[in-house]
Amino acid sequence: MSAVFVTATGTGIGKTLVAAGLLRHMRAAGHPVYALKPIISGFDERAWQNTDSAVLLVAAGLPVTLQEVERVSPWRFTAPLSPDTAARHEGRAIDFAQVVEFCREALQRHSGFLAIEGVGGIMVPLDERHTVLDWMSVLRIPLVLVTGTYVGTLSHTLTALEVLARRNLDVAAVAVSESAESAASLEETLVTLERFADSIDVIAIPRLQDTSCDHPAWHRLAEAIVPSFTK
Image (cartoon, rainbow, N blue to C red; front, side, top):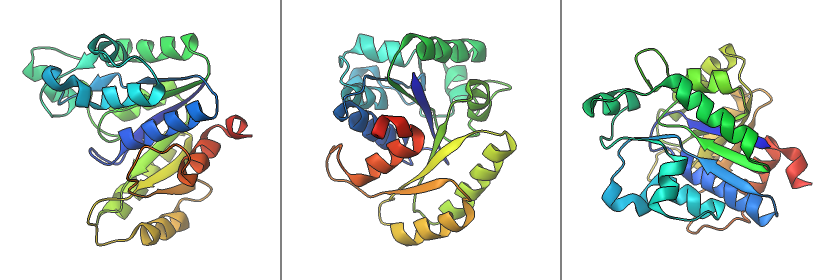
């Protein structure tokens, strides 16, 4: 099993876009794939077909049913808030140990490539004591940090990279997902981040108009994560 944890500098940045693109690319290359988004907030059961979980199922070539959504996303909350707050609104709480064990079981059970999509940004709280950063620190699989080109992204991204480095986490790549109507261009953002990212691959993800799996960006991203899969 080769696996990656897809995280971001914040919410609504493009984690699902990047995870789905990777899954499609790996499938097209002939590799078995599987996807998880264990925790999701803002989940509307009446429109489950439009959720991030359903997008990942389509990309992975898995059955797109509510039952399968429930399987890949066991912790679902209605309010579009941080997971700890959304859970509290429903009189529930996330058991951090169970989330970790759920991911570890998937890592052991599935062959091929596994993409685990996080929730929100790297410091989003999951419960009273744990954040997404703690989750990634326990799993210790390579990360893709997704960021945008919006004004402010440079500070957010470099801060995130500093925090991840302090935890000795393996950032396989920074995926710069082009933001809509940003004053900063994708190229300008890429060049600046490359100056500060040391040996980490910084890969531009343009605003693709389709679900093509053969855009060069996906190959570069896959190669940064699991080079042996792209030979």
